[in-house]
Image (cartoon, rainbow, N blue to C red):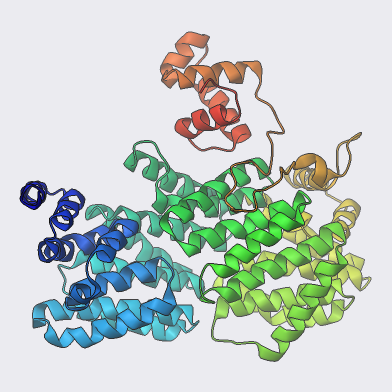
Length: 569
C-alpha cells in the first residue's frame, strides 16, 4: 500500500498537484519527501492565501523534522503571523533566526528579508511605525530582485503603514505598485489586500464613492477567481464596503456585506477581517435593540488576537457606547465611556498616531456628552489642525461634528450654524449620513433649525435627506425598531445565518421577474429582448435589485434571492 501511495505521490508531484502529492507522501510515511515538496511550494501557497492548507501540511509532519528545516520553520512563522497568533509566533521566529546559520548564503539572504518583514509586522502591532518602516526598508535592501513574492509582501506592509500614519500619497504609490506586481506574479491574496487597503486610503481621504468602487472591483475579482463564490481574501473589501454602506445609511446592504466579511474572516482565521466586520455588526445589533448580541460580538473581537489590536477594538467599543448614549440616551453606556476616558487620560500612549487621534476625539465626545463642551473644544482644536494638515478627511469630519455640537451646547448658535453649513458642503458630495444621525437628537435639532439658501437645491435636498434619517415615518413606532428587525442570535456562534435586518423594501413585480430571468441565466441583452426594453433599463432594474438585496453581483443576487425565498432553491 505504501508503494502505491508513493507512486501516486510522484505522479501528482510531476503534474504540479502539490496538495494531493503531499497527502500521498504522508500516507506512504515518506515524510522527508513530503517535507521537500512543502519547502518547494509552501511560500507560494502562503502568497496565495492558502494558509489553512499550509498549516495542515506542517501539522502532519513530525515537529522535529519541521524544526530541522529552516524554510519550514519560516513557513510556520508566516502562517502564525497571518492567522493572528503572536504568542506562538515569537518562538518560531527565534528558531528561524537560529537556523539561518545553517543555510547557504544565497538562500539565507532572502530568508533574512522575510524574517525582518515578520519582525516589522510585530513592531507595527506594538504601535511603532517608524521602526517598522525602517525594518521594511532594510528587508527590501536584503531581498534579491528576483524574489518578487517577498518584495510584494514588504511593499504591501509599507502601504498599510503609510495609510495608518496618514501618509496617503506614499500609501497610494506603494499600494498601486503592489497591486500590479501581485497581479503579475498571480499572488491573488496580496493583490486583493492591496486593493482593499487602497479603499481604506480613499475612505480616510473622504472619497467614499471611489472607496466603494475599489471594494466592488476587489469583490468581483475574487468572485471571478473563485468560480463565482466569495473568495476569502476579499473579506477585507467586504468589511470596508459594509462600513461605507453603513455610513450612507444603507443598513440592509451593510449588514449583508459585513456578514459576508465575517464568514470569510472565519474561513481564513483572519482576525483583522473578523474585527473589521464586528466593528459595524455590533452597532447594528444595538440599533436593533439586542444588547446581548452586540456584547457577544465585542467579546469575540477582543478574544481574536492576544491584545495585538486591543486598542482599536476598545476604541470602536467606546464609539459604540457613545452612539448608544447619543441615540438612545443610554446612561450606562455613557458611564462606561466616561470611565474609559478617565483611564485613557492617565495612561495615553502617543506611539500610534492613528489611535491617538481617534482616542482624543472620543475623549472630546465624552466631554461634550457629560456637559463639558468648552473642554471638548479645547481638546479638538489641535486635532482638527493636524487632520487638515495631512488630509485625513474621515477623522476631520468626526471632529467637526463634535465641534459643531459643542458650540451649540455653549449657546453660540450663530457659530454652530455657520460651521454646520460649511460641514454640510464638505459632506454632501459623498453622501455622509450616519456621522450626523449617530450624534442623536442634538444634531437633529440643530439641522432642523438651520436656514438653507433657497438657491442651493443640492444642499437643501441633502439636509432633507439627513432629517429623514432621524425621523420615523408617520404612523410608525420607534424608528430603530421599525427599520431593523433582529432575530434571536445563536449563542454558539456570532457568525449567524439569520439576518439582523430583514428586507424592508420589497422587490417590485417587475424586479422579481428580472431576478427570475437572471437566475435562468439570461444576459443583459437577452433580458432586454425578453422584456421588450432597452439594455439601459435592464441595468437600472439590476441596480435596484442589488440595492434592495444588499449585493454587488448577479451571483450574489441569485444566492440572496434563494435565501429570502424569492427564488426556488
